[in-house]
Length: 289
Image 1 (spheres, one colour):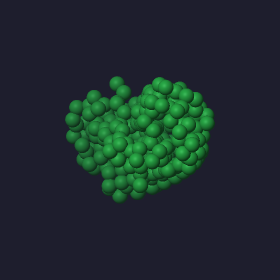
Image 2 (cartoon, rainbow, N blue to C red):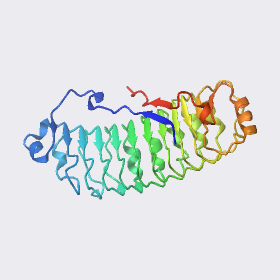
Image 3 (cartoon, helix red, strand yellow):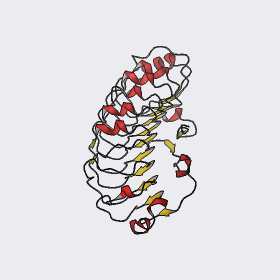
């Protein structure tokens, strides 16, 4: 059983500097006075498609379409350009392609059936959180590296076989949550991500770890349940003090000794007895200003 607790802090809408606004729960109510509609919650209304004429809500900041039955998006559909939070979680989407929203900060596509994300995701230049957990993604578009403000990337519970080679261009990224995939390697470019503090790669197919990873100021690194038998690529590093879990790998006792010598100041976890208080905890990274 995995003993990691993720303390996920739900972002409230007021983090975007908005004062409290009335939440509209139906298109009918919102249509009565479109200019005062800032927050439209259409969650759980059995919708099969995005309502038409949403562009009339020019001041709309938050749109919640979660927990519906939306399976297809109209090709490159346009949504209100001032949107900052868009929630499509828990629908039936297999592809995601809409007209880029430059001001969007949070995009939630969790719990769909996504197999494809359009390359134009790289044009959503204001994104700070991208939530793609629990889909059927095999790969991420390379254009994701253009999201230079992104600091929180959740891609767990997919079928990803790799991370983009240019993922290191995400210089603001603080957390990659990528557990339960089929990832076989970690790109060397990850060493360029100087703000990265959390990397969760639990239950993947990784066998080799790039040395560059151990020059980052991580707080938590989970490599549990992979295909790791050694850290041959890693050089001795006295400055690496992170918490690293290597449980559920096929690492021999001799290799464990070698790793401890290479990373003498790291908090290394190989077995249950190495665990302190039974859990590894980490929090959502601090919001970018």
